[in-house]
Length: 198
Image (cartoon, rainbow, N blue to C red):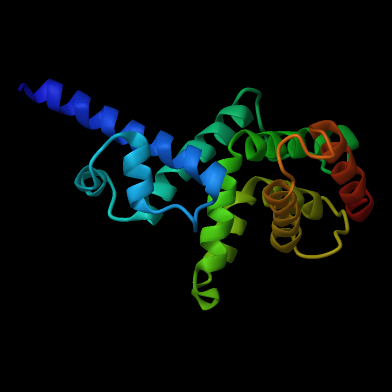
């Protein structure tokens, strides 16, 4: 077998494991999915899992990379300067729509991240690091507002984290095809946050 064939097979195995995990995390959740469940669903051996990932957390980090790439792709579709006025309803709504869209499109990863975070040691600080990292764009916009003299209800990092946490928890909780459609959710949070920011 040539080096190229081995690399292609390894890439196929890795992709199959990620796809199986994404499906199972969406159906069962992160905590209820075992590595053997993932390998069985992918049609691969358990040993092949460990050729690609040290553990389930490393696999989840790879899936998180997919989610972050999707968010970056949506943000880079249009120029995204720091100077966005989140006290303007349309600009705020556009940001929330992007965040909500990515969360819903990658709900299985969002569920897995939430469950993994909750199962982690609270003293590790992981939850805060993850949340502030994922809301850095919002924080930058809020810092720009404050630098321009706009009074915010709190520190930009804290406000951005609160916005992200609120969306993430609702995305986690609201089942697909639930009582509210995406437009209702985005509009409700836009108006709620707009009142607090302006």
